[in-house]
Length: 175
Image (cartoon, rainbow, N blue to C red; front, side, top):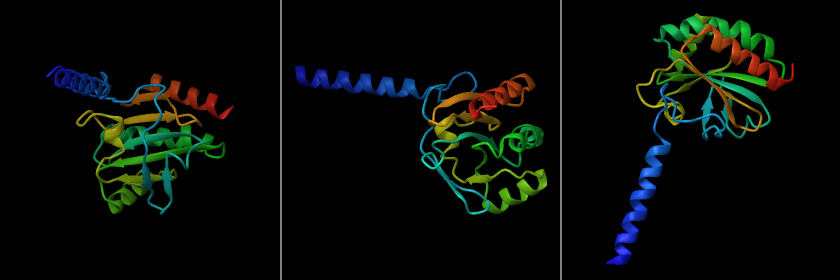
């Protein structure tokens, strides 16, 4: 009986810790600064594969988006001009991650937006939901350093936060 109670206590403790680790913050993130980015594998619209492992040694941003997202549409031209164009040749990747849409829809969306940075469908949201809670809003950027650690998180399109993100990228790529 004593053994059973101890086992039950340990199970409850482990479950509580697990649930607590997955509780979203006030912006819907279930990851935090300093965490390693969760494992992922995405194929962009050009057929290139991106994984957490393939991006080690590179500074990158995971830019979560969707064609139906108005804030995303507002942010994407800024990402293209103020982030991708200045840093694209400096051991840096900006990867658009389109939530829950088909490859064909993502191709059309990228063309409509006039972006040249890679964009990949996340058809079942597996990467998104390893970063943020369901129904927490799609517009967000996750900046990852060359060791795979999350170093900056944005939500929506706030100009001050966006400027701070650019400054972070500048520092990480060595400008």
